Length: 139
Ligand code: CO
Image (cartoon, rainbow, N blue to C red):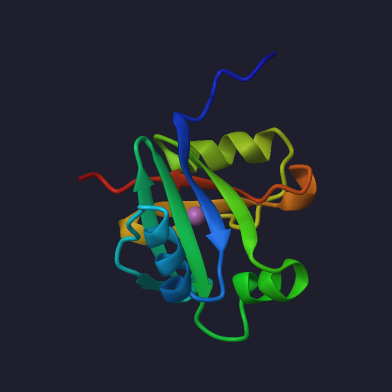
Protein backbone atom coordinates (compact mmCIF):
# COMPACT_ATOMS: atom_id res chain seq x y z
CA UNK A 1 0.00 0.00 0.00
CA UNK A 2 1.24 3.48 -0.83
CA UNK A 3 2.70 5.34 2.09
CA UNK A 4 0.50 8.04 3.54
CA UNK A 5 3.36 9.72 5.27
CA UNK A 6 4.98 12.59 3.42
CA UNK A 7 7.31 15.51 4.13
CA UNK A 8 5.82 18.97 4.57
CA UNK A 9 8.18 20.54 2.04
CA UNK A 10 11.80 21.44 1.44
CA UNK A 11 13.40 22.80 4.60
CA UNK A 12 16.63 23.83 2.91
CA UNK A 13 19.33 22.94 0.40
CA UNK A 14 22.80 22.40 1.89
CA UNK A 15 25.89 23.64 0.05
CA UNK A 16 29.44 22.69 1.03
CA UNK A 17 31.84 25.65 0.95
CA UNK A 18 35.45 26.07 1.96
CA UNK A 19 34.74 29.39 3.62
CA UNK A 20 31.42 30.91 4.68
CA UNK A 21 33.12 34.33 4.79
CA UNK A 22 34.33 34.08 1.19
CA UNK A 23 31.00 32.67 -0.02
CA UNK A 24 29.12 35.41 1.84
CA UNK A 25 30.93 38.05 -0.19
CA UNK A 26 29.91 36.30 -3.40
CA UNK A 27 26.28 36.09 -2.30
CA UNK A 28 26.38 39.74 -1.21
CA UNK A 29 27.40 40.62 -4.79
CA UNK A 30 24.19 38.87 -5.85
CA UNK A 31 22.21 40.94 -3.36
CA UNK A 32 21.73 38.00 -1.01
CA UNK A 33 22.45 38.25 2.71
CA UNK A 34 23.96 35.33 4.64
CA UNK A 35 22.96 34.95 8.30
CA UNK A 36 25.38 34.51 11.19
CA UNK A 37 27.29 31.20 11.28
CA UNK A 38 26.49 28.64 13.97
CA UNK A 39 28.95 25.96 15.09
CA UNK A 40 27.57 22.44 14.89
CA UNK A 41 30.28 20.29 16.52
CA UNK A 42 28.30 17.06 15.98
CA UNK A 43 28.70 17.59 12.23
CA UNK A 44 32.15 19.23 12.44
CA UNK A 45 30.81 22.23 10.54
CA UNK A 46 29.85 25.82 10.85
CA UNK A 47 26.46 26.52 9.21
CA UNK A 48 25.02 29.80 7.97
CA UNK A 49 21.64 30.30 6.34
CA UNK A 50 20.43 32.33 3.41
CA UNK A 51 16.70 33.03 3.31
CA UNK A 52 15.39 33.66 -0.19
CA UNK A 53 11.62 33.94 -0.13
CA UNK A 54 10.28 30.57 0.97
CA UNK A 55 13.59 28.83 0.26
CA UNK A 56 16.52 28.48 2.64
CA UNK A 57 20.07 27.64 1.63
CA UNK A 58 22.50 26.31 4.23
CA UNK A 59 26.20 27.04 3.71
CA UNK A 60 28.38 24.42 5.42
CA UNK A 61 32.04 25.06 6.19
CA UNK A 62 34.12 22.33 7.84
CA UNK A 63 35.55 23.14 11.27
CA UNK A 64 38.67 21.11 10.46
CA UNK A 65 40.11 18.46 8.15
CA UNK A 66 37.87 15.69 9.55
CA UNK A 67 34.15 15.17 9.18
CA UNK A 68 31.71 14.46 6.37
CA UNK A 69 31.72 17.94 4.80
CA UNK A 70 35.53 18.17 4.86
CA UNK A 71 35.68 14.77 3.12
CA UNK A 72 33.01 15.87 0.63
CA UNK A 73 35.09 18.96 -0.30
CA UNK A 74 38.18 16.81 -0.92
CA UNK A 75 36.22 14.30 -2.99
CA UNK A 76 33.85 16.53 -4.94
CA UNK A 77 34.80 20.14 -4.31
CA UNK A 78 32.37 22.89 -3.39
CA UNK A 79 28.75 22.42 -4.39
CA UNK A 80 25.36 21.07 -3.42
CA UNK A 81 25.79 18.67 -0.51
CA UNK A 82 22.28 17.68 0.57
CA UNK A 83 18.60 18.41 0.33
CA UNK A 84 16.55 18.65 3.50
CA UNK A 85 12.90 17.66 3.83
CA UNK A 86 10.83 19.42 6.48
CA UNK A 87 8.97 16.89 8.63
CA UNK A 88 6.49 17.42 11.42
CA UNK A 89 7.70 14.53 13.56
CA UNK A 90 11.22 13.29 12.89
CA UNK A 91 10.89 10.13 14.96
CA UNK A 92 7.87 9.14 12.89
CA UNK A 93 9.69 10.14 9.68
CA UNK A 94 12.68 7.94 10.58
CA UNK A 95 10.38 5.09 11.47
CA UNK A 96 8.72 5.45 8.07
CA UNK A 97 12.05 5.58 6.21
CA UNK A 98 13.31 2.50 8.08
CA UNK A 99 10.07 0.66 7.34
CA UNK A 100 10.47 1.51 3.64
CA UNK A 101 13.92 -0.09 3.69
CA UNK A 102 16.17 2.95 3.68
CA UNK A 103 19.48 2.72 5.46
CA UNK A 104 19.90 5.52 7.94
CA UNK A 105 23.04 7.46 8.71
CA UNK A 106 21.36 8.53 11.96
CA UNK A 107 19.25 5.95 13.78
CA UNK A 108 18.13 8.63 16.20
CA UNK A 109 17.74 12.36 15.57
CA UNK A 110 20.49 14.71 16.60
CA UNK A 111 20.72 18.45 17.03
CA UNK A 112 20.87 20.57 13.88
CA UNK A 113 21.01 24.31 13.28
CA UNK A 114 18.64 26.53 15.26
CA UNK A 115 17.90 23.70 17.72
CA UNK A 116 16.22 21.65 15.03
CA UNK A 117 16.32 17.86 15.17
CA UNK A 118 17.86 16.25 12.10
CA UNK A 119 18.76 12.86 10.65
CA UNK A 120 20.29 11.75 7.35
CA UNK A 121 19.31 8.90 5.05
CA UNK A 122 22.11 6.95 3.38
CA UNK A 123 22.86 8.36 -0.11
CA UNK A 124 23.39 4.84 -1.51
CA UNK A 125 19.64 4.35 -1.11
CA UNK A 126 18.67 7.74 -2.52
CA UNK A 127 20.42 7.69 -5.91
CA UNK A 128 23.39 9.69 -4.76
CA UNK A 129 21.44 12.53 -3.18
CA UNK A 130 22.10 12.96 0.51
CA UNK A 131 18.69 13.49 2.15
CA UNK A 132 18.32 15.15 5.52
CA UNK A 133 15.11 15.11 7.53
CA UNK A 134 14.51 18.20 9.64
CA UNK A 135 12.04 18.83 12.43
CA UNK A 136 12.29 22.52 13.21
CA UNK A 137 12.30 23.67 16.81
CA UNK A 138 9.00 25.09 18.00
CA UNK A 139 9.37 28.86 17.78
CO1 CO B 1 21.18 20.68 6.39
